[in-house]
Length: 410
Image (cartoon, rainbow, N blue to C red; front, side):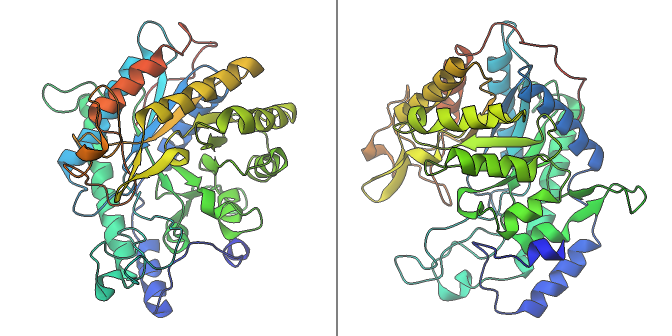
């Protein structure tokens, strides 16, 4: 592990007090984990079903969770919205849906610049600093890692209660039949490494898990093949995702596959394309062909959000039509190649925000300021999310392509 963490690591905060970081890491290393090994193993089984065409992966939630926003109501709202979307996608005999939230840990954010337009240190997520535009608030604070851990544990407790009860609220939708899992970007390595645990077997045979989450992904800005994030992910028994932007070559994609799925385990690796609606039909096919030819059975997932970010006045936004078009392009590529379009990865909220343009509500540029509430990137609101789910459901086959894997769990 030390060798992995000694490699160059992009997007890490400029901590002023490394001794304070060490102390927080030591405390976290003695705490109970956020998730359990058996939950991670269950997700591995379900993702194997996705990879082989027997299920579909729906992953979504906040762009950036905040401490103040991680309330029981908001966690239940995200779980409820994703469960409703999963029900739409799986209706009428379509493949079962594996449901994964971007929650209980999505507190760190990569940024394109170290300082913002005001000359302040950029906001890197609540796990590092505060959104408030002051020098004091933006100073990286290692103590926030512990607060992120506490908030993640509380959110996970809400998820488990909802899964156990089988519903979201007294009259809300049923939680996904196959349980509900959580995920976040494995960005802040000081935090992630402090939550490494083994499965309790003989030390020579023990598997290593990052029990901050069930599923972890490497982002577009941290996927350097020789960097610390890829090396760290390679140590883990968790299922891993890698975001692939439009500059990704087939050779580079194959390198990720060989490094992160050396045992060719179906569903171990999820390749998350985020090409943009104008590029997906050109860039994705040779990548899919190269990876498929090498014999690895990965999950192919579409992130139609990040490649379609534009500006409207003072706001970052995304057009609903561009999001839908990238999803269509993703499905078209896989249909042409005979591979399985395995899932969606979305930034969304159960709230009635006005952050993305279009959809049946016809949100326009003049509407954005009404309820633009995100801490970072624009999210689909509840109505837009459900509208997208209905559109995607029409693209899915009427019945599973193979028999799904075994039953349910948190």
